[in-house]
Length: 336
Image (tube, rainbow, N blue to C red; front, side, top):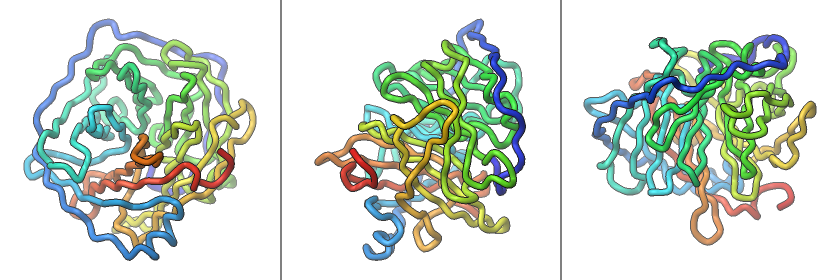
């Protein structure tokens, strides 16, 4: 996960891609996880409204583990069984009940990929796409610029090195990925296109499962000035919430966050996909380095939005936080 302001990126995608399926079933190792959960005190409603706009912050919790490494989460999936599943940049997966339920019943799994490399580049999951009908998941490994398809049991069933991601860098790559309702996939690069361009990020549109459709069409995503793209979640109506982050101060690390809205129906190859600001994740809120977002239908027509922070394995200086927000789609900016 890149921690600084945008650097110069390299050339646009080539028109080739490499593709491979796993030659043998991959194994995963799992264990029960012991979690402690501490509910965070929230600011007064007028303060929340001033920063979060139409989003309602319903709760915030800090997660710790007394005897296991529970940290570094950069991607999040809301499962149909009521649990959340978080993916870390070390290839660890934590599945746990959604709060305010008990901290028991959590489980960790170590992903095992087919490529024979055990360094961070070979395990650095920074984004995930999810198909709720089949339970399949696709993870993007930033260090190797690779997309890996996983079965519902988290076993690798295929992988691809998309040509469009080949030159995205080892620490500035595919931070946001989502599967659209029609089966297409969107992937957005973390950094902007150059040091002189502070708003536009390279992005790719795949016609379907990237393992089966590896040749993507390029476009650009436009967000607020000097913010990195860190994750995205597609809403039931086809619009997407894109989570963005900016490093304000290096030691100790302090971050600002943004949530913006963009309509996936407006994505066109070769053009700019523009966004509208929705919320500001300011320091007066119980926040940290938010890198993961998931959205699912809730009650009374509202959408539940989950945010999770990456503590960069610095549990003394940073925290693993989970937010629960909700919003009615009609209250979001723009037509729908």
